[in-house]
Image (cartoon, one colour):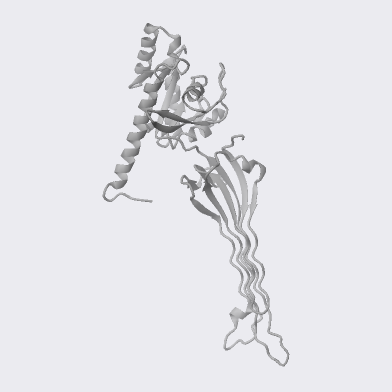
Length: 345
């Protein structure tokens, strides 16, 4: 199945049915009263986060979702049938944006979460509704309310515990393939990964989900290389794993490039817990490793770990550090939620 994390769709709720103007007609009843029924209500358009989906690819083949119109009222005080409701089924982690692609309408971060996108129009009153002591034979009825049509964007942000960051060819996909059952494309050239990948990683009997996004480049926060969309996939992660290529000729510059992109992207991304790892150390001798780690510390990295995703050296230690950060973040959030006066959505 192909991965798609952004889709534009057109939705339209159902229009309400018209009220009916009708009068009772029976044998031997000379002046039958009004019996026009009300129109049915138009169908709604909902969006719901469901299980079993991890891409928006279905919305590439269907971009229009129209709810049913309400039926008009009928004689003998019969109301029209309501229009059918339409529900957009999306993966957990999907954001619904307005047509400007900036205003967030809904953020479906929980399984089963359901949000109304366009309400159906109410049905109009039939002439039976307008009968009164002073108007025994009303000849008026209401039209149903019109439909609501709008264009929206669906943007998927993956739900993962840890997110992989780094320049192209930093070894992120190799790390994910070596530590999980995920099988991302791996090759010795930049931009091998073109779509985000998820992998379930295990260490010491515990499991957590890691997201591997395509390598970032300078200007990613402005959309260069569509990096702004890739960064969105790690917004929900509890911790970020920043991999730096130990064989690069500009280790410090590589590190600062990623940090700058996180800062410029905005939000809380730059403030998230981060584990900095020097990858591919199997290609360096002891002195070169020490020099590379010193360059990272000079560039601002507080703690620098070393590993080789290919040989497996240091991988378990990195996984344990990630797990500790994830567990610590979860405990901190739980404590904050239990504090007196804490606000609960």
